Image (cartoon, rainbow, N blue to C red; front, side):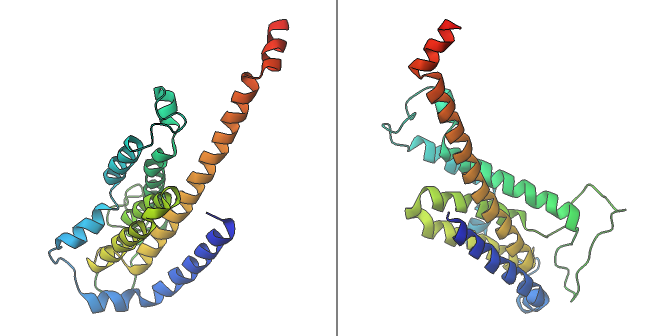
Length: 225
């Protein structure tokens, strides 16, 4: 993802997150969907924010890799260093970051009133049960979708639709404020971008080391020493 585009997305996301706080209570009051039975469509979108879904997607993507791609038919070491596994690492990092974020922000989920409730650090300081900001389901969904659309551009439309659908349905189900979802989306986008950057950095580094090790001049010097 180009740096300029990422900056634009984060800038727009930050503004949207700020505006969402202005409408959190109005949206919750308008929907009034607490404790309603979730239809199958909402469950479908919610599963997009489940880490297990991304494990299956990553395995499928790895199995569908072209046999003639470098390392595709080689040993297990080569199989481990593949971009397809970013479809697991990015959602994992996103979800973990969201869960840790909840511990620090400590804002509870929607409760039907026009004000936020924050849990005191005295009460369960190491538990984020009942906390909503940021939404970890949304963070996982956007963390995976960001990698999916970067690795497989042809799948960008369903990736975006599923991620946005996950965020939207978490709000529609009454489990989160809109700002919870947007916060989770920003975490997922940042995680996906950083995961790609980290992978490219370590791949270039490992390739440069490999070139040096298998360089005839390097091997000759090593034998002489």
